Image 1 (spheres, helix red, strand yellow):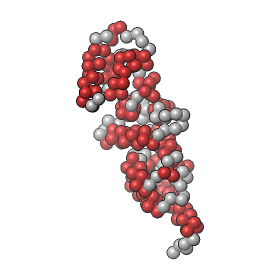
Image 2: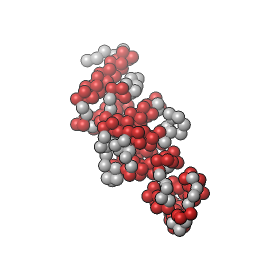
Image 3: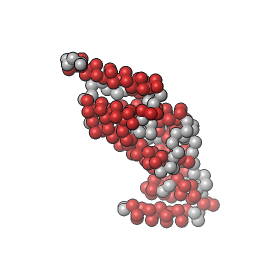
Image 4: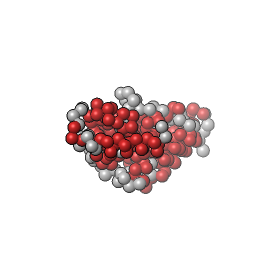
Length: 226
């Protein structure tokens, strides 16, 4: 069904559910299935809440679309509460500890857009920012061996741009040492973009990574440095 048609159905559902609020007795998941069906993820959380005063998004995070998850981040305590943010990130997993690359990409695209548009005011808690970067980067690292230079450029210079300044030594060690130079150029280009926001110790660690990378390339190619 085309998006305008789905939107029309959502508005129809809202109108009808608003007339039934006094008789809502079902468990929340049954209510979502019976009342919204496949159109649940086409509605905003505010719209869903308007039709059921008992609806609490945190109890059904795994049923939310990525857009709804980002909406939840902006309207809840997720930006200041590590536990809440951790639950949001866990809900992205297709199975325990496994998050599809496309889901990570969709999440960061929506999240970055929300920051740019001012819906999410950026990170107000360093611990939460560290949690997001650590979780996303660790999951992303599983795909590094399949990345092309353009993939590295897209992730390090665009998708991770609001997180990358929080990189630490443990996460830096997840970057492979056997990449081609175009990939390293893309990676370090991302670090260069956030350089003004990097702590001095992190800048030192990135320099060490660059040096280690060059030494590895020399050792594997047999070409002396000049």
